Length: 287
Image 1 (cartoon, one colour):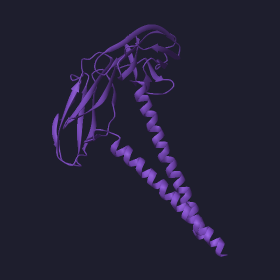
Image 2 (image 1 turned 60 degrees about the vertical axis):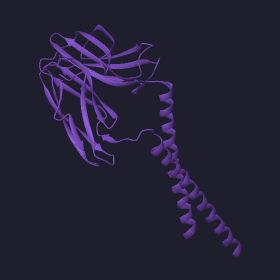
Image 3 (image 1 turned 135 degrees about the vertical axis):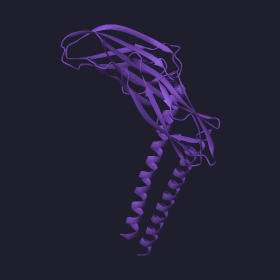
Image 4 (image 1 turned 180 degrees about the horizontal axis):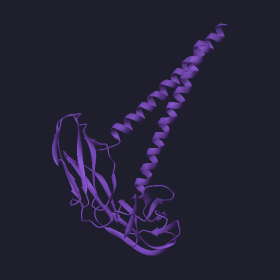
């Protein structure tokens, strides 16, 4: 009986040692990754990664973004609209924020007297040497859209390695039951800083619906960064738009993303095994 108790005590000690070791490893990974993973500390947070708005001709839209000062001192903020400042106005361009406070910024988009199409720009937010950007995709359609479409990348990913082809699936719909018709389909790629990467047009015949795929060779010297692939569907006086966001990355950034996934996996496995060992200890303790 005494021998059994000694074995049980050793088992408990072993389990506790494993639990403590796993706990220390997990805490170490968490601290290293979240507190020392970035060279530059964040000083403010945004609730919006990017802004995509679809409007009719002469339309207007009001959107909001939230900016939070996560620094320990008051900070001054300034915002600038790039590329589409004639279409996007802000309620405030400069303001101060106390630590921990959040500011709602009203964004007014007005497309009066602007031709149908897809327009790109960015909001640049500055504070104490830090800069963050919110990409803006603004689609303008005619008041009546006779043919419209959906645009998706496949396989579904927003990250494209330099040298890879861009594969897109375009679904075109007859919105009013016109029947078999000949449309002008334009697809183009633009950057958020105003660069036109490519633009091609062709005629397609649509009878109720058309599923259309396209493989696009990107320029070999395309810069790293954010881009938009968009389509324009023109039929008589009707223009429909669709767009999708993607990012050109290099091998280094791709490796970093894979490393991040491994870190998340390790943390998840740590939590899983911690719960198992804890359950075994409780079972051994009471049963």
